[in-house]
Length: 339
Ligand code: DP6
Image (cartoon, rainbow, N blue to C red; front, side, top):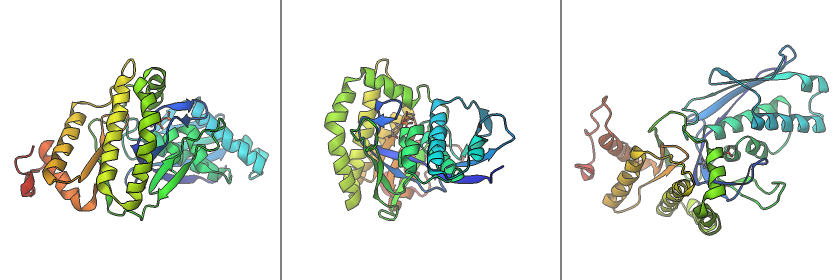
C-alpha cells in the first residue's frame, strides 16, 4: 500500500460569475470569471488518498458516506493524472494498476451553493498529483472536475481566463494579486439554508446556455468590461468600485437564472431581504461598505473590510435575530431603528 497523502484546499467566492460552458467535456467557460480564495482554515475541503493492491475497485468517501465512483468527472481527473504519471514515468506500472481510496470532507455545507465542488476538486487533484508524483498544471486538472475549482488552486484574487482555443490550453486561472495584497478584506458567509440545491450549477448553466437571451448579452457586453474594471479595483484597493461591480454581477447572474426556461430560482425571500438591507446600510453610511454576492444557492457572501465587520455583524443580528443573543446591545447609534 502507498503512504496516505492528505491535503486541504480552500473555497473561492466569485465576484464575476462563471455561468455557461463553451465545451461541456473539457469544462471550458463562455466568459472570464474572478474570485477571491478564502483562508484554508475557514472553509475548506480535506482529502486523503492512497493506492492499494488489496482493494477490488476505486473507492470514494464523501463526508463519511461511500459514493459511487462511476462519476465521469472523477474518472476523467484520475485517468488524466494516471496518464501523465505514465508519460512522466513518475511511478511504476504496478503502482498504477492499484485501485485508489479517496476520503474527502468539507467543514461547511456541501452542495448548498457554497462552492463545495471547487474546494473538493482542487483538493482531490492536488492529492492525486502528489500520490502519483506528477509535475503538471494542477489548475487545469482541477478544471476537469469542476470549472470553478481551477480558481481554488491559487490564493488571493484569481482570474479564470475563458480562452478561445478548442483544446482549452488557454483556459487557465492566474493570480491577480496574492493574499497579502488586500489584508483588510473579509468575507462573511450568511447561511440561509444548508440543504442541497434543486438544480446543480452544471444543469442550471446548461439550461441557461440553451435558453437565455440575457446570457448572450452578459457574455458579450457586460462581463469583459466588468472583469477589466474589477481587476483594476482590486489592484488599486478601491472598495467602492469593487463592491458595486460585485453586486451588479451577482444580480445579473441571478437575472440570467430567471431568464432561463424553465427558470432556475436560487435566491429565497431571505436572500432578497439581505440584498435590500445591504443597500440600505450603504445608503445610511453614505458610502459603500459592504457588497453581497450569491452563487447558485440562497446563501449570501458579503465582502467588506475588517474595520466594518463588527458593525455589519451587529446589523445582521438585529435584522435577522436568532434566539440566542441580544443582538441589539452594542449596536452603533447610526443603526438604531434600522431598517
Ligand atoms: C455560480 O464550477 O460548480 O458558483 O463547472 O459545472 O462544475 P461546473 O460548475 P461550477 O459552477 C460554479 C458557478 C457559480 C459561479 C462561480 O463560481 O464562478
